[in-house]
Length: 487
Image (tube, one colour):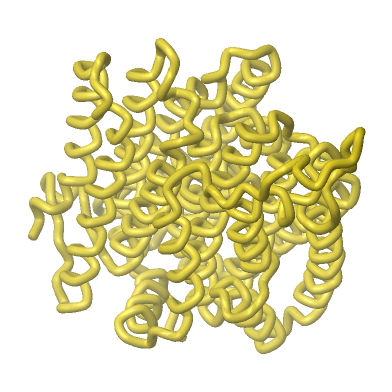
């Protein structure tokens, strides 16, 4: 089974090379779909192995698939598949001279994210996360407009600062292990409670590493790159960044937290993550109230959800199964919404909310899935985000963080009201009157302007997955146990 560990790494690289070789072929458009499928299938195979009691390892212990990494690899593949498959019609790359490079960068991004979740070394994990900065910087600036290039530069600068801070933290964690018998960056060795790591170095290193990875996960106050990057990137790239990049950065925080909790206890990072989570919710709520751009609206929604996930991570083992379920639900729904936003932008020709009216009457083929996905992202049942949010809030009350989750609830209500108002503005109402008035002024457009099956699959998955006890519930509990939880 260890050979499966190499498929999500080598497969996307092969597809990236094929993209560059097939410059004149229409098959090039499916490179991202093929790479995502390879990652997803590998993740599902590894989940099966883990549930059967196997822990695949490869590369002399460099790669390792436990319950958490196998689950996260499946998330990367699933979100990647929805973004690339659903974005086939809206990806501007399919008709530009740089199309081959675009598809190759998508495949490289997926390979780097797969390496980040499969690496046993936190140093290699850091290198993989840094590699995504390079790939996504070119993807954010793909349209070559002034605003997209500005967003790409902002992302590169702030992202590089974040990963540099994380690198310093990882160096300090390694220094903390120097006094042990085997200095190492292996996560499985560092997470053993009997190693005698230096508490002072672990405190400093853990804080810096979490701060650095928090920048990549879009947590406040290091969030300012995210709205620009998400709003200017092509729609499939925005879906990948929101659903994969942010989640993998949070995964890195989970790995670091499991080390620091063993050495210095949970209180230090609990305070740090609670503050970052509440600040992220506050910023998202305040900026969503007067938002005018629907792609930036989705970007601020990502900050909101990452903030609530950070609070779940701060709560600890009682909330971790809900956080992990949240990662999948948020990734699938946000990928769906960004894909749909790309289609709306292509048809309407504007990202301004005020200029997109009466979609439900004029373009029901786009408005109906948009409304369903918006209901899912704000936490309506039976979508999995609802159960994830309820699980985090209940866990917070149970461990004595009632004040934190209470404040989060208030901010979530503000965000819900803002989202409802903006969605109603775009979808509900009558189309603008024509001059002279004519009953044949328009014909309702029932086309979805792209593949509908990936959207159906994403919505169906998030509707049902919270009710699947086996094997999903078992996998989430095993992943929590990997991080030291006994929930």
